[in-house]
Image (cartoon, rainbow, N blue to C red):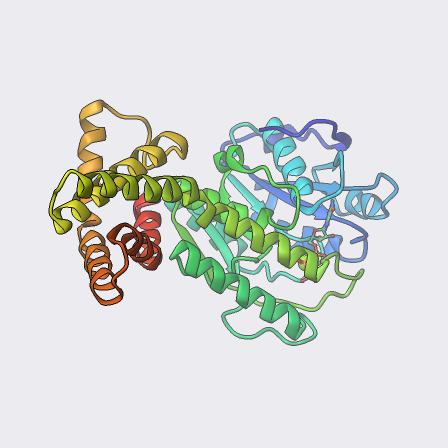
Length: 367
Ligand SMILES: Nc1nc2c(ncn2[C@@H]2O[C@H](COP(=O)(O)OP(=O)(O)OP(=O)(O)O)[C@@H](O)[C@H]2O)c(=O)[nH]1
Ligand SMILES: [Mg+2]
């Protein structure tokens, strides 16, 4: 993915930045002329000339452009359309086009609210482990001036939902300060505020480890926030759902339905109830595995036929407990409520969906 239609407003073309240790800094800004100077100074204090600072604005007339020039940034670009994510994508892609060797990208707001005193350490950590390093603002509750209670709750809730659906604990998913390996950029494409979450999801999918470093969070002293609370909250929530549960919907629903058809056939030809249940569940799990593998680039890269079977067996064996549980529940419902076994099995399968989801997501991104 690359960004089209952007405009370069300024480029220092300082050749000394083109070295292997360069770090691309992406600074999206809308009317941040009062604070951008401070942010640039703090970045230089931490990273010196290693930092290749790209500011992205959405309006050519924005006074931030002048302030950024005066503060000594390396490049200023104009994004093709509005959007926080698109601003980052524009700055990052431009940075990479200038410094193809850069190994690390830093994203941070231009509003001087993020504590950058650990930036150097975060960059080192990211380089050493090829990791995503997140500045965690929620280690201790930030002052209400810095983060109003509603924003604090929103951040906590989004991080909690993320934890439930991705079975991964990240204390501050919405932090705007993130440091990650530059090649992760190939997997990023969202234009709105969900960009921040996309960086985490892309890291999980790529098997990149994630670290959190506690930082302070300060009040905004410049222009008002660009956050549209409700709209952005809903967009991020939808993104989390889209990337987690719905990812397994197709395979889940398909294999669930096919399992019931197979169960009906096995019962009709006179097989005992328990073996019929187990056999139909097995087929459904294999089917789910194959759909996931084919359509969601499941587990690692493409491998040989033998490896595929081996992975399938491993995947299957982890489901043993869930098959026993589902069959048990199905028989219980069937006997107690006198429901047809196929219907009882259908209900049991839906009941154990959370367990299967948990197994599936753990296996998919195997952490
Ligand atoms: N270029 C560009 N920058 C943007 C856009 N939207 C937001 N920004 C900048 O992106 C950064 C993050 O936006 P903020 O308004 O600080 O949003 P936030 O940090 O989630 O919310 P607060 O905690 O209230 O600051 C700031 O530097 C903004 O100026 C956009 O559409 N284009
Ligand atoms: Mg901000």
